[in-house]
Amino acid sequence: MRNTDVRVSSRRLICLGVVAALLAVAIEGTSVPVTAQTVGTAPPDLVGIWDGGPRSRRINGPNMPWTPDNFPVLNERAIAFQQVFDEAIAPKYDCVPAASPALQYDPYFMEVVQWPDRVMFRYEKDDQLRIVWLDGREPPLNDFSVQGFSVGRYEGDALIVETTHFVFDITGFDDYNGIPSSQLKSVTERYWRDGDELRLTLTLEDPLFLREPASYTTRWLPAPEDYRLAPYACDAEEARRAVKFMIPKYR
Image (cartoon, rainbow, N blue to C red):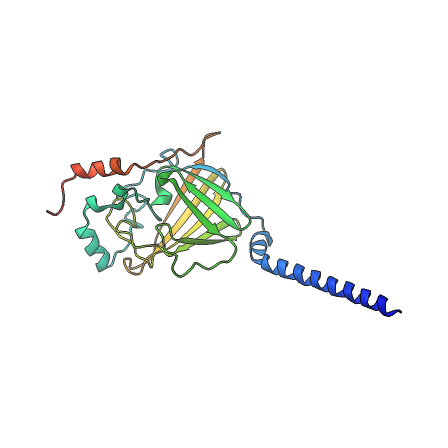
């Protein structure tokens, strides 16, 4: 074989090796979402607009979704905050959105969109958008927010969502009981289909305020055909107007 032919063959082998290496890197880089969604059963189909209003479940309040059977067991710190809480300081009167675990139970519609690497939850209440990452990423250490940082995975016929990195919220537990939540709050959600219904079991942990985890289960029904989420459009001036008519707890 001539030297020229040897050099050409060597170049071809090198090129083939580079291509193979690039393919291996690409496959390795996508192994997390592909494995999480394609091994075993297919992911549950959660896509759609879902009705969380009165026709789906009881309206939330001081004792709903929390009942005597599942009401959170508060520690002394939480009880102290609850006792001094004044409704006028609630962040909702400054258009601060509701957070988990209240957001999921508020009587509004919700849209779910699924992609290979993420799931999007868009809430009619407070115009909120949550992204659940399925690609195995870790939450940044300094990324704290009202809705926290959500990662998820599929387990059988369910989507499991784990959310951490919440900011402190004086009404972070719900809109009615004056129970706060801390930066240590963590929320685990399990979504699954039951026929035409979308169901959720939510479990909340917060060692700074709760003695043990608290949990509730709820459902959504399919929205009417062609329904589109309505804008919430909180107006700060209008939101504060209600505070003027409240009897202050402290003077």
